[in-house]
Length: 251
Image 1: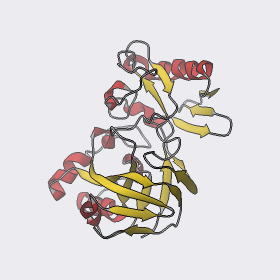
Image 2: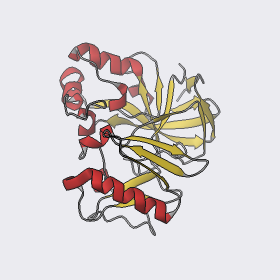
Image 3: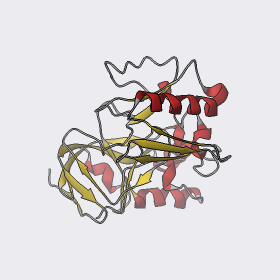
Image 4: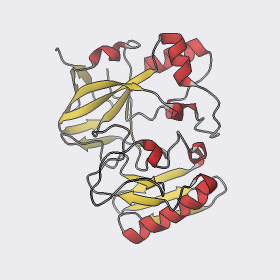
């Protein structure tokens, strides 16, 4: 098995960025993955004392399907985030500065329109990950398992619906047996903590922003569960790159 695709998602809910390599540290996520998020105005998120809160407190695909039409690009060297709307409207700002985050927050709030609750705030808190899990994790999906779902439903279920960091190929569903086991990926060691239970965000077509499928129901009907992918914590840091071997260690 090898790393076939490697992604990060700098802004929670927005588009992926493909990478050739990345360096991870123990207890962390992929650098700049879910590093930014738009908190809805009624969210109880305190940047001075950041803690995990559910995704519904933020702009997210589960609640805001139309954000699938936005294209995001983050330049970590300069700290700038560029957003492009389907009508050609765009913004570029330094999101490592409070003034730049405020500009992005206003722009995204305008895009959300009636879906914005109160006065949303665009956040970046160094060291905090706006992930769906309470602890920072890396998400992995077996391409063969996704293909098994496609084969049974008879329609494409694009990988962009599932927003994994790492894609690989192994016998379909074999990854479900890895929970509690360690993986060597490139120079890093990860421990698989749980299977990934999918949510209504996967209903959103990444090209059209329409809710045109129900992978959760499809998985349950076909396989008796709603799981596609696994989550893993970084136990020992190192570099992960495209083409790196993935080794499942003995228990």
